Image (tube, rainbow over all chains, first blue to last red; front, side, top):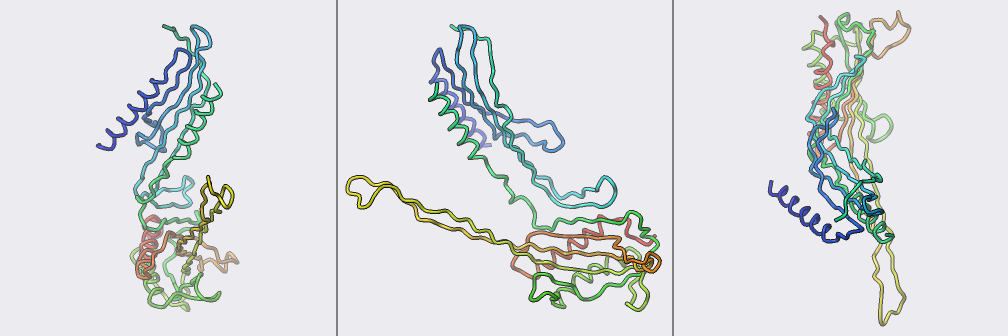
Length: 115
Length: 204
């Protein structure tokens, strides 16, 4: 828990410093992301994720940005016997499942009001 | 703009490079055990078995080495105990057994060598400003894996089929330690698990 709080504070500081670079034209985001998977392979929530993004105002009400998020999922599955679907055998082992996802590399166009 | 893209790329590169490797310490040292069977085989039709006291050892000295007698006995006893508990009767080689079983143990050593060349920058002799240098270094590590293969052959129908068919197999494999006793126990546990996950292997 202590570790979690520490990570939260560190990311909060990073977030604050990123906003310090704010200018009316350019924005640079650094954020902490928590991943909650919804599949059969991994069900453990990941706190090891983040997001970086850049946005630039190209028109008074339009910004164009590039962002990327990532998350590292990990889960231990205790010793289990898995039967082959065709009934021709079985395998028994414990498993470490890991997924590193970095799916969100995209360009985005957001309408935005300038102050 | 160019600066921002470069900065962003560097940040991404650092983040991706710092990806945490999965923690494999949680994994147990027990062998992974796989079993396969001939789905056409009627296991309840076999009543007697024979298994040799000799266990083939691949990874020893020469191409025809066998496991030391005491170690082989532990593996063979595990097989006999499981088969007997499932209703099979042990007979001699000359007693026309319905199935015959063979045991093979394999030891495999994998050696990994990582080599990093050193570098030196600047010029010699340097009076005013010198770049750093690194010595080249090499890391070597090895790990040993073991495999126990138990195969059951159909001898009852060998003449009729004009072939000796393998009807059941279990393969147990995993990392080995430095203690022979522990390694053999891993093999015994693997054999026991193979029978456990094969409930069809019984006489009735």
